[in-house]
Amino acid sequence: MKRRPVTEAERDEVRQRHAAGETRNQIARALSRSASTISRIAGDEGLRFEGGARVAPATEARQLDLAEQRRQLVGRLYARAAANLDRVEAPDGYVRVELLPDGRTRRVTTDDPPAQDERHHSQAIGSYLTSAARLAEIDAGNSAGEVRSMLGDLARGLREAFADGEGDTNGG
Image (cartoon, rainbow, N blue to C red; front, side):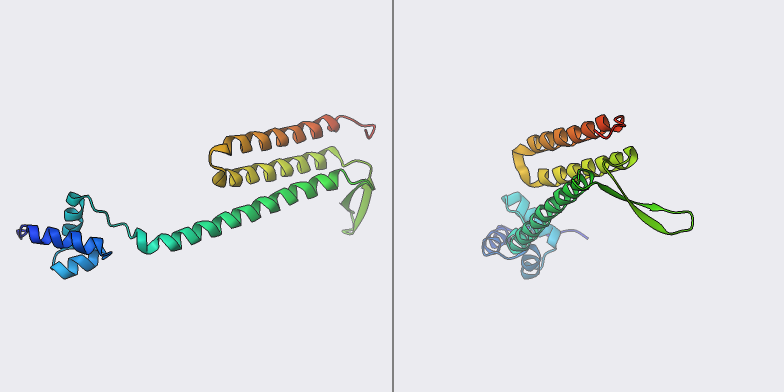
């Protein structure tokens, strides 16, 4: 089926209705044209239909909600990293639970964690800090690289500190 040509009057009406805030589909119904024809006319006229005015407040609210969730997660990840470090460096000793052959458990307190436990805590801390840095990057704008660098350096330093202590058998 052959398309009927678009008239100058229709172009004017598209411009007017667009300026009045009507959607592509509303204009198409009013002019008895397809939405694709209205899109083509709008494109020729430099007009855009993105639903922006209609959905912008909802989009902005959602972005703010997600930013707040990221901030909360960053705080929780830092808290987890700190809790792991506090456990390793507890002034009253490192507490671990051993499973006995009969299935019971017992709590054992030592001056320092075993090397394997310390390594696991170090890996967990590094993982928490890396995740926090990635989340912080999203909202950091141009300083994202600085955040990543600072937290990466901190995580690397913690790993090295734990690694240095693994070979120390004298508890120091």
